[in-house]
Image (cartoon, rainbow, N blue to C red):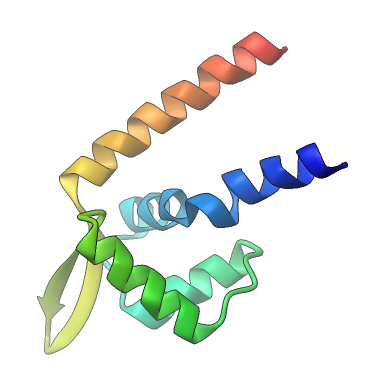
Length: 100
């Protein structure tokens, strides 16, 4: 069913920032390749190139901030992204209550 496929794409590939921010919130700052590996572990079949483009876009959009540690560039969620993630979780809880 197309509607279900659109739903899966929307909450999955269409909103990878949610998964990235949640992961970094739990694990702390990570380097780019570790973020890509984490997304793959979660079932997203993304290339390394797409992963790095995604990370750069999230930095440009203010979702992620670059952190320098021991000469390595790591990424952490911005405070605004953390706040927005909380709102998304609340919205999803409300949606689940409406649907069940």
